Image (cartoon, rainbow, N blue to C red; front, top):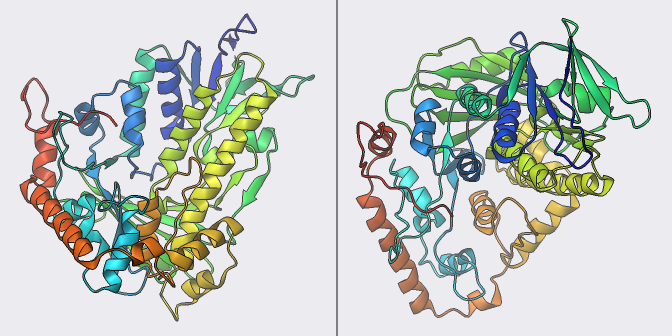
Length: 519
């Protein structure tokens, strides 16, 4: 049996075959079915499991959901989601210390100076409190509060961006329903071979175990670590970054929740890696990312199980990985998404974002039946820039650790850095300067929070900050602190807000929380 959905014209949108489901496959299918006229076929086998441990996101996920026309309250109910305002890093700079990489702005800059430069001046003068004092998101998160600001005129509250913690398997199932309702076709089956065009080398079809042939114009590889199309069939090389990010194992397990849950992800440093904690409505997701050179699988599992909030709800799931990316994520007429494209450990919750950004990039460069080499090259250039800059941000956490005397962490501090990261660190050390390069994902406040949180100290102040009037600076810092305090005091708790917002509209047609205008 042959299923042929190829386009009949060179200028028509391609018939797209997605190999593999999970979060990556169904994100692609839902987006293509909603936003393009492409014929979309997704092939997956229920016999092949998905990793499904990436449950924490960054605020850009809201843009993806909005593009799909998803009702936020329905999404929260369907995926058992909670809100996320940032990520806490416990024990990274030194034992007992913690800081947060919170979303959104910190304080308020003055002229050309970002706020962290003024804060460094205030710290030198002994008048500035912890950087967290001037972050709306962090203070709300620490107080277990949540709110969305109205987008009406005259509302002077600062931006308070949010993301989500959600069940990745439930999210994939939710997107599947949306995709199929909009015409995407799912085929159950296991791919056993790939048919190539003899002249171009492009993929022509995939063959299933039961003999069916699924043809298409373009193929999206969402086959996970196997990278069945891009890695195995097209032999696209893998760039290994384990010399910078040496963790190569993870063990994950859900546990019971005690009812209250934090509106932030927690990353806690351990002897040979770190533990994640992701609170959902119905459970807490936990995992330990570690380096097998310093910790055995059994030791890692025992360490994780000893540091849970509640009773484990499933057997621990062990994973092996190598951090890195495919040298080209788009080769011939095949694009890889998710784990098929590479692996970035979930330290800064970028896994789902990298799927989202690749989908957006692909839609922007959507090919016809014959992809132009120039478009493919530009896609790969942008993907490499995004992945390497995220890589650098993750390396920063490891290299600046203060866990002296622990073999794994000592090794991380001693490693040679990529030139791109060396430049950023040296610039900050010189005068607190942070440069956000082009469309780099992480913002200046994000870099500042991690550098300052990891106790990297500039050797000198920026001249403009050094000349700031102390009295005016003290007044400004006090006003920011007080203003944020008033906002946080007025917020409902995270649990109260979530329950009110998620209540079905038929039951609660006028819920108190009102979503802001999309930024």
